[in-house]
Image 1 (cartoon, helix red, strand yellow):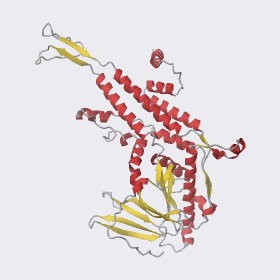
Image 2 (tube, rainbow, N blue to C red; image 1 turned 60 degrees about the vertical axis):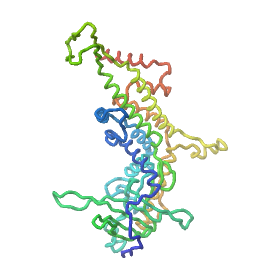
Image 3 (cartoon, rainbow, N blue to C red; image 1 turned 90 degrees about the vertical axis):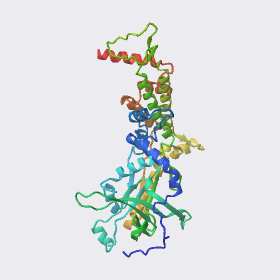
Image 4 (cartoon, rainbow, N blue to C red; image 1 turned 180 degrees about the vertical axis):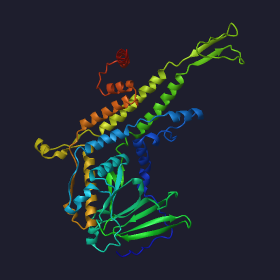
Length: 464
């Protein structure tokens, strides 16, 4: 294939230029991914567990080390994804493309596995991208040789943080189409044995009819064009997958309503843990005691006062403040799961008659059904772009995603995960019982303290 001539470019190019829409979403992307992944993406980080105003640095460091994050986000997203993927999509593809289904990314991932991962990730940040790429065929003579060498398109899942900048223009049909997009790539450079591995950041620019690869040369402090070639399909081969659509390349995370609550629970847990740590250590108060007197306290020791008016007292915490913090934790957990379940409650649009309601199933929809439709449309676009790379008719492609959701099943799933959190020790038995009480699963008049005593009595009876 002929080399595409380089187009006019400004002398100074900022390769990592970010689109305003990218910048508007970046902070939420980071927070959502951190809360979803949990572990060391949250724990031990001072930006998620700030130091109290009058807290000593030593105590803060210890509190930061002890703090444990309870991951509510991962099971919630997994529940949503499980509903959408209760039944795998039905795919109607041209015969020549059917073999791609078993390995869509040239890494061995079948279509169901690949797109399930994309749709799950899309619900975390609110948007995910799939690049429909094609191997370099400049040294291939024609389509026949491509087929003999099994050259074929493949899908690449892209983190939204990799899609840096873009522009839309008016299309012939009156809609909007991508004029260009800049994608950041991390390339591992070839090296020999025992040599240090080196990576290089490159920037791929896609246009409807060509592409370029750039890198920044630190020695001359300039952008350097590495390669360019022809894009034969006539459009930028990038497809966005939206969780909740807010605008072009602008998605809304499925976790948006609970992220701050999850972090609030993490901080509240740390405060309670810190309070319980200090509450478990009695404070000794010595009255009228000589400052230079040495006191040894231990098992079996007695204390002899130096004079008749000297006294020794122990101050112990009553625990009222700690119980108050536990109650706040319960309220936060309740709010997290209430918001999660609110997302999957069905909303019914008004219809003219019972007959039309029966005929039009879409009159009963849910947030998950809407997401499934968006994912269905996005996957369809991926396969149509792949068809264009192969010279096949994209109009024959049809993808159908599951629309039979069970919101009640999601509620049961969230309940089960909360119970699992209790069993794992992430939340206390008291927190779990109080949450069930607030959700009206348990009678409102149930005395939680008495119930906890009964549970402990049963445990003692079994042990003894």
